[in-house]
Length: 612
Image (spheres, rainbow, N blue to C red):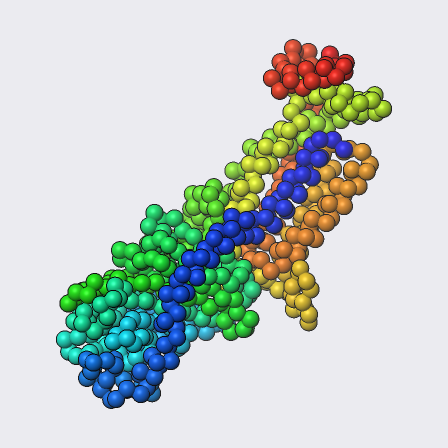
């Protein structure tokens, strides 16, 4: 087997191994998680007092005398402690969302995104009822107060502020008319951002002086919104952004708790295509505890929670300004709020390729108002045209190797029973004289690999493909299924994806054609190559069966275009002219590289006779 075939085999294996490694947590991530255990223990210890008194908090709202909402020496005269069944709901609504506020805890009870539906075609609700838990915990007269368990006053009706397209509403927990905790929600006409302001008025003698902060606790049970709950779980986790705008996240594949000892710009509860984000105007103070819990339920994707301090300076009046983002993980929409890092475009240069090549081209084609299946076809063609010089160079390298094949076989026979190093030196001398680089086809293939990996990240994360149908696929962002199996096959799934099958078939056809065009090696290695040619598509079939049908469609088109490209090169490239060029190169003096000189020196020291 010649070196070019070996290089091809190595590249195929490298792609598969690289994909496997790329999707697994790194040793650094595991080590970092381990190092954080001490910090976790510290924060858990700090929260233990609050946890032990949660029953007192619940009893506080249910058993306090009427008109008392907080218990202590300073009685709170207010109807806020009414029974839970007197809960009052208030609706804020704009062009893109419907927000339901509840007097219980003064929190957001439900968010409906009006321009989107879930996998079943129902109005898309990010959460509903107690699936969103939100409240402040603090000490008052040696008691733990949890505002999430108390009744707030819903102050009047939503009022128009700051112009006709903005609505504001306040939820107030009163000690007295001059002493209260207030949540103010503001919703603008066409934005996914909800203004959120916490006002502390006259509470400096209510909240214990030893407390310089209040604990904000937020938990969301994420409902299933997409067709494949498995894929949705694999894309849902907690994200956060540091003050230097670097973003990090908890590994999607497991339940995990992390304690962050740095201030943050925002904390996000991300699902595959939608997110709930808490954004602080200045910063979210440390320490921040974030936790994700895997769910076995068919109803919920994951449970994600956050806890962090809200600074309090015991002033007569002070505020904490923040906002919520409730909306799609659409790159352009998120960019408007500087949250675009929630779209997983890939690390390092893969992200750059997606941001500066794939997304601009995709957006341009999208503006033509054509089918997304056609958009993917045109995108594939554009990528192939951009890579055409590299593909041509790779083909020409293989063509030169094929022309030299008879001479290489003669050398194999000549040095069959001699030292392998002599055979290698003779072969390299032949390549030098002919002006052929046996590694010439390797670099172009390696340069194409980043684009292949970048596209692998782009399609599953592309919000534009969500619920877009093409041919038999009803959703290009999820798998296509032409047959539902009555059982699940390990490594494959419980359905049959036609696009994944087509991708596997075209991969086999392309491999067969590519092997025919490459110079062959010995029979044993040729057999091994054929075995790999059939094994790899089977592995890819299992991996891609549950992946985005848009991604499988793209790879199928790429295989077909490459297949046609190879045949076009075959008819356009004159191998006789290549032979003539090689013979002409043989007549020219050979310039040896420093590396080649070192190899020859090593061979001479061992007593080998080098070819002239």
